[in-house]
Amino acid sequence: MIKERESLLSRVVLFLDISIIALLFPISHRLQQILSDFIPFINKTFGIKWYLVLFIFSEIVWIFFISFFQLHHYFVKYIKFKDLFRELTKVFLIALIFVPSLMYFFQARINRSLFIVYSFLIFVVLLLFKYLFLKYFIHLNEIGKTCRNVLLVGNVEKLEKYVKKLIEDPTRSFKVIGVLAKSRGDIGRKVANGVRVIGTIGDFYEVIHNNPIDEVHFFLLFNEIKLFKKYLELCEDMGVTVRISSKVYETKMSEPFVEKIMDEVFFCFKMPTKDPRKLFVKYTFDFIASLILLILLFPLFVVIALLIKLTSRGPVFFVQDRGGLYGRIFKMYKFRTMYDGADNLRKKLKNLNEMSGPVFKISNDPRVTRIGKILRRTSLDELPQLINVLKGEMSLVGPRPLLIEEVSQIRGELRRRLSMKPGITCIWQISGRNDIDFEDWMKMDLEYVDNWSLKLDFKILLKTIPAVISGKGAR
Image (cartoon, rainbow, N blue to C red):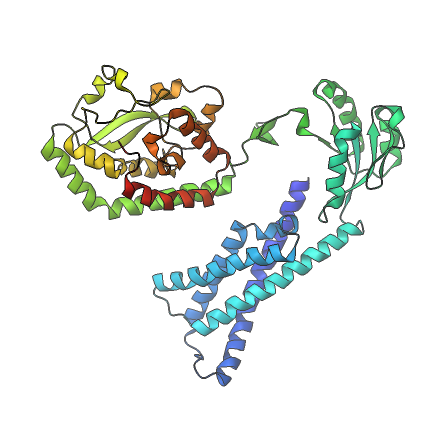
């Protein structure tokens, strides 16, 4: 219910953002005309068609990035004015780049003075609107207009931190009526910030019947779950919302949520890095970037293909089964760097392996062709993997895909590296590659998976360029 309430409020705020940006356009146009009477280098006007194009592009860019930075959720995320100012400034600066770029791409005329006036007005008015709305929202919470009365049930010690967080958060949606403890000896005990124990679990019906309770939050141990059914039925009969703390099921990193599938309700856990919106941006960027790179690098593909064909027998591409997302098998493409059939000699050379763990790597590999050595040293042999990225089997950034037999030998928490799509480059790739042993390599992959963000991907992509040029760790 809290998510639904926040979602509704977010949609209302986003609608108001759209309306404000729309209303500011005619105001900006009029202001620009007034300024042109006093400032000679400001252009007055040109066709209405281009004004409409400027308005549409500005609306699209501002709303897209307001949504991307979740500024319509500011009443939850951005409590302080400086935080709100910082995030909105990002959108403002992005708009100053993106809108003119779109106008140029579509060969539309742009009135620069109008664009600047319009963008500045949007920034100032949205900043004031969002900050004042935030203050009003907090005020409503403080006087109890938007708060829901909540009864807490469970261990008093476990509830102390929770109560403090609820009360200290200015955007809180709950007002704690009291706590029901397990022992009668706790009755009257102060939990935090004026909240006290008003009874025991045995007093549940009487308390919920005699007080205006909107919700009940349970903090029970796993072996106490059997008690939950009785209280749930009581709350259902009275139309009271029930929540049960996920601490019943202790996890290391996973975030819990409840989902209904085909009339079945599931208590789910997912990794905090698996934000669907951010993953959508990542995979959309992968598709667009790989498509553009394949088109631009096509002449280079042709040259490399000819060199491979002229210097050794066999196919241009080396195709091999690799382990992808959660161990899915896919065919990975590389430019062939070894003599045809050399992969069959791997068992004979196993005693020369220089890598720890299941991975096989050796220096001065006798199976590698002359052209293959150059391709490996410059990482040009990896370029065909852009096809895998385009097909959605790989990403530009992610843990490197392992051989099927290597994947089968990975045990325990190391298999968490398979929870992200494999990539062309990764932390291991920019940190020395084959100079790093298997254990440290896996730790780097887990570091990437557990701390993944779009910003981290961007940093890795930038660092990949000098790493490839230097050829450090390439074999």
